[in-house]
Length: 248
Image (cartoon, rainbow, N blue to C red; front, top):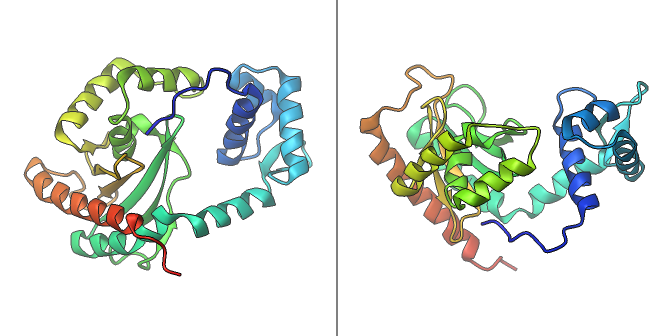
């Protein structure tokens, strides 16, 4: 699930993608000084990197000389969704789960201690269609994040958080949670209202049910075996669909 760190990683690429993620994921325009302080980088270096992304159209500079997502990011997002075998194969199974379990259904991936996902929304409250969820959330709070980190070694988890200086957690407590997730084969979110299982061999994503915002949102212990069985069956079906050669 996680690639071995290269002997000589290109730090300019690492810093650039880290800053691009931060700028695009921010809820408001962000400036160079703010990001330099957040990631403990030289402000001149941050200014040069963000300026390059603005030149390429990945970011857009506002009149206040701060940065927001640019048109290039939207093009990449559309291309990635169109070309994503995971999204295409997961969609029909997510729709079926949403109808049968009457809950939000999510597929999410882990990147640098954060999770991003797509979902089918709550039954009866919005159209039955795939839509993006929260852009990024801390992996240690998420059922999907926890089940995906459970596929990693403890050393890999600690190293990942060590490299993400802008996001912190109690790694000792997290590792205990991940040990239970490895044993059980599923993980609960921090609020007890989400339940997640892995997709793929090797694991590439997580599939989750969430009752957040619904009456009686917390998942009860007696419900877990049946819910896990339903999620695992759908995860296996998604994996099988992804293994089939594309038509045409």
